[in-house]
Amino acid sequence: MSHVTLSVDQVRDLAARCLAGNGCDDANAAAVADTITRAEADGCASHGLFRLPGYVASLRSGKVNGAARPRVEAIAPAVLRVDGDGGYAPLAHERSREPIAAMARESGVAAVALVNTHHFAALWAEVEPLAEMGLVAMAMTAYKPAMAPFGAREPLFGTNPMAFGFPRGGGAPPMVFDQASAAMARGEVMIAARDGHDLPPGVGLDRDGKPSTDPNAVLEGVMLPFGGYKGSAIAMMVELLCAGLIGERFSFEAAQADNNDGGPPRGGEFILAMDPDRFGDASWHDHAETFFARYAALDGARLPGARRHAKRAKLARSGVRVPADLHDRIQALCAGPA
Image (cartoon, rainbow, N blue to C red; front, top):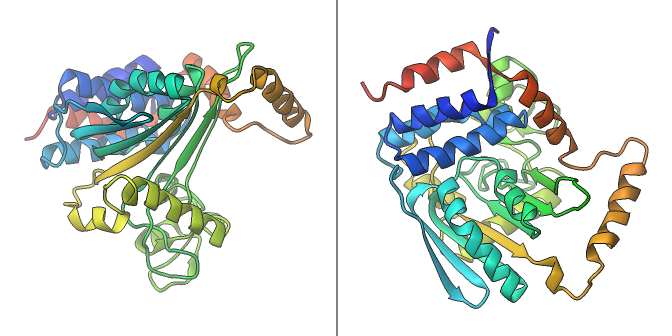
């Protein structure tokens, strides 16, 4: 497979130009392009430019509002409701970040119900900015059914990812992890199918309900939760927090309402932000650092996110390698609808 190499800035410019050419206004195009760029800059191809054709499809079909103006409303002393106005999630996150932080610093905790949005991105890009502001943060979202509950063979859950961020000091970046409730992110399965790679055992079943390491067979069949019933329970928790609690669509409801244009369905996101200075321990930071030091000293251990940060530094120098056929497809999409 041939590739082209783009600088991080070129990735951002290409994504913004493509989005603007297909119905996004400047604010929405810039916010989504930044999210795509964060993924490419951290070596996460499954959530970078690879997603751009899906964004374009949902703009061209009219499903997504490319000129969305998110609205932020405090509905309780420690609860924000963010209405994304039918747009993509990144601008809603940008517009709500300062209100979330202010509420968390006032009350100690801010719970956020993000509704009426279309989420298609990596979650770490949403909790990392909050952690950089000194907050402990969690985020989770559902999707369309792709994963079976433990013991079943039919999909009910999305891959239902969650992310967690914890601030650090001494110049260290926040500790951030982002993981699916499924044994593997669906985007990674799609990349494996594109590149012709087998999957590890345990990722999914084919359409006949038989275990398979063929990514195409799994995409036609069903994915499995990580850790059996444990991952299944976490996926259920995500559904209940992102749909049942905040009045948005469960994954099966999102699928029923979606036009299947290749872009993300409408759904919700649950975010929790906490100000560690308001939890009664003035030495929380130093205490946490003793844990991080002990963790890092273990032979073979690697703090979550460390590999992303290493890739971020490397790719900032070397540039991002993008499959040439994907690059050509995006260039063609930049011209807008025929």
